[in-house]
Length: 132
Image (tube, rainbow, N blue to C red):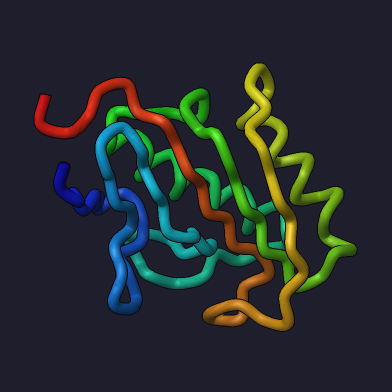
């Protein structure tokens, strides 16, 4: 099996030496998404709810490019600058996982790129291995 980079213009371009996601067989390893508008490359305005909405939209775009959706996500990791934002972030997050509850870790961090308040990464199981 080969590593297959996944990229879409509907999510922010990588701002460093990494891929938006890597497919390996039937697994999709998505890099953390921060609340950047994919058209402008700028951080979205607003509170933690607005930032989480943008992050989830970015994740949806990467998943879609790999022919996957939130129902295929098996693990998420949420990085928050302030755990006081947990409830608001969780309210937005829960709408994307209404019928499917992946495993999740939430970690408080000192800071995130571009001064954002939230970053989320996901791991998904895909239906068929790449190239089949």
